[in-house]
Image (cartoon, rainbow, N blue to C red; front, side, top):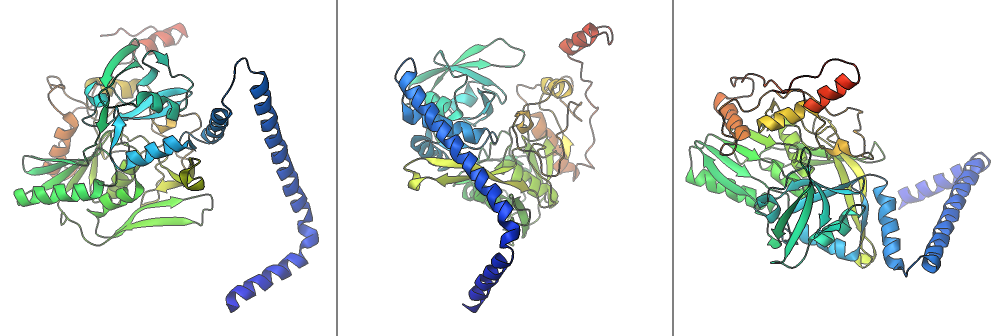
Length: 463
């Protein structure tokens, strides 16, 4: 009690002694508040004008919800307003079961863009890919809609059909017909690859840590001589932070998993693992790609920084910001989804925009290697208003990846990244594994023509 009293007295004395000095600041603050109230009055005037003079009747509730969402999405791509229905849908998603197509999407310049399809869902079976644009649903354009509005059009009763119009790089727009299902993402998929365990984690729902632990326990029981593990986080769009900590905790013997830092640099929250590694030190490789985001990047970054696993694949998405969902009136008025902090790996690396780079960069296909060498890959850094990496680093630009499938490799039947992960485990490390010749990526024909038109040289023949 005395401590609180002393603080109160100190504050009073300081305030009295500096009253004349802080007065201009107080006036400036009042002026700022006055400007804010003036703009709120302007908002009311605009709403009233639309309500009385627009060409047809309007729904003021929808207008205000759209204004709220616009205000928040102007901050960064992941902040936004959730209507009561959207808030309920989000809760269903994180519980691991909901109706829809099984696709993780975001918005880029008013266009719905695919982050990742989910394993075993209508979207994945139809061949929808990360980076695809969804321009229409059942022939109705979704251009300019918020993500929540577009998702609402894509969801519906299980068994009903829906047609998505897809725009993809290097192809003409095309329609994809799907049938909605009750989406029940598999929490974990496990099998043996020779002497090595393989577990795929499609997302981070409430069931992920328990399901992964059970899968590994089952693999060890059936294969007591298991020599190592591959954790596949490719096309894993993330999910719950506590599950990311839980998954990393399975393999770390204590120590930091991730930290998050907000506006006040002194306010650092650290999430730590508990003692005990369920693999007892067996070697690990984690597979990542451009669809690995958020919680998947936290796990990959933690295991990499703590030297618990080596990473194989291509650089992850780069979604390293923390969103806090703040219910309004207990959810009756929806919720605010607000970016409140950035994630940092145990060594202090910011995940935001830059992503997690693998220890061995391996393109899944020859076409993917070509794309990485010739154009900027879709990632968090693609968004115009993406939050910057805290340390000011930038994402790696176009380059030729270290490895790609060699001639004769059957890309339709084989999984080249998985094969290289197995090779790393068998060799003992990325450093020890025999390296393949670096792929000879061709310069894209359009790039060569553009250079020729600009007078920078003759067009390169496409072979």
